[in-house]
Image 1 (cartoon, rainbow, N blue to C red):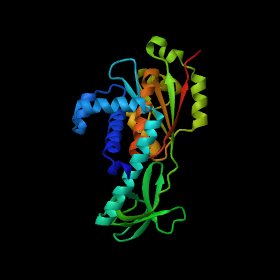
Image 2: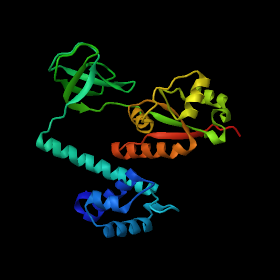
Image 3: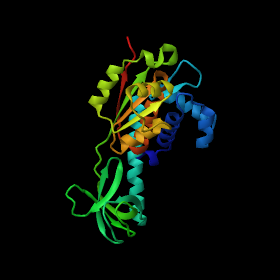
Image 4: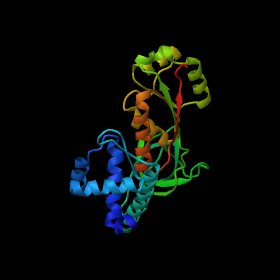
Length: 271
């Protein structure tokens, strides 16, 4: 692993990660404190990363963003680190305990199959034909109760969810009165969301007009990304200026979880 063999590669990886955590307003002094290196060293790395096409500098001071090339580097590095950690855990015989919901009465020591349904992990009978991952239960549980399992083998199959970000006009642009409600209805019919999220008063007013209720109202950027991670399709209503924040949170989740949540932005402002 180059990250662990080459100190320069590791520092580059760490700086790129710190930037995506803080972008677009990135202070080199904060990165210096976080990594325990000098501001001068951070500045040199920034210049090199900009020259190599990993960072884009904005018009304002301390305004930096990662390029797609840098995001690819972070995702690949995160995957390699995760593989290495798994090897360490296996070598040290570290046992993990995972939580799930019992689909039927279960006894400690039973082997169970594992299925993801509607974003929730369920422990089902081991002979369930849809189960491709298995574990051993650590405690008795009735149907619907929580349980812990270990000795995970196989892979829990999850069809990654998608996020549809619906861009709304601001109050100054007319708010909900400047929204094409018919287009939103069509998008909902086509997208068939499992969850609906809303951010801001304009979005809530639009849902009122549609006679719909939001499933997610707070911490929506992270909640939408995590819901998609569990296989749910999420329909999100946000004012235009908040779209970038949503996208940044999705990209952070992609890097942290080494996955690729797909998303699309639709502008429903009246022309």
